[in-house]
Image (tube, rainbow, N blue to C red):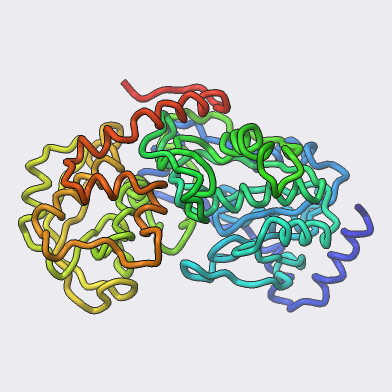
Length: 442
């Protein structure tokens, strides 16, 4: 351990003065007067502690004497807004020797479908390996190259199957199994609450990086709980793994499953460029489905996944949706011109979702209702996104059942009814891996 710390110190000395100086810079000030949701959250939650908070408070006992690496991105921060890698790089009690970046990169500089590549981080003075688009075997080679004994994972998830960080988690668990290294999840709260699972369950033949294994579209778990489920249900049967990994979870404390992100007292950091707010995350498990249509899902606006529309949509869509009386949400007629992605520079008519009661709001049922209503109002214009088979909507929903039902004229209730049996089976499996008690608010 002392040898690697000395090597890291020499490497930092060779880097720029600015990079090295940043390690000892004073911490940012705490939130000041005028703070609303975060301040209220700190009072309500009593200050939720993340898995990293607990690891550090315990003097890094879980990784004492071991060479460790961290899979993370900009969300891996402590409450004073410093990154955990920068904190650990300056702490003699832990031997951090490498970091690993997912989609968008370790420091978060890349857009969707991109990463930062591998490099030496100028601040922490450690190598950063790019995991995005890599096989588990390639990631295992990275773990071996870094001579790791334990690899840690800390990335903020947003509770949806197609948010790719949970599949980075899965691939890295497989890689740890192959490399024979221990795996430690530094858990974080699910920011959209985690009282139940919703939506269709993925079928294995539709596996992709937006859904590798058979979990529901909104899984209702923390990443630590998902890791346990992956280890118990999928790694033992995965031909690419050497069986389950040696898994540990540093749990969150003072968290209740019904809490939303603002109530935890933890600062919100965009986990990806199109997830600017917790409000975006609340609707995302549903409205991300518009990615698979010819409507804009709001990318290229300041409200991705909250603004939905297309050049052919008019005021009738908002009126029709409000008439449906969907729980917890209202729709405002909206017009926008995306600066990137679909319909760049073209004015789109559509709606903005305004979620007034998160506990009653059902993101996936709402999105299905929106799609069905758009199909009915604009039958000559609405279309699924054209891709090579299978359709992208099939990848996102996990099978062709949703698309076929909608194309066959089913209403939203009929579409939702089509996945209930499989969802019930997944919910029973999920219950076995929950680490934290809790239920919906009354």
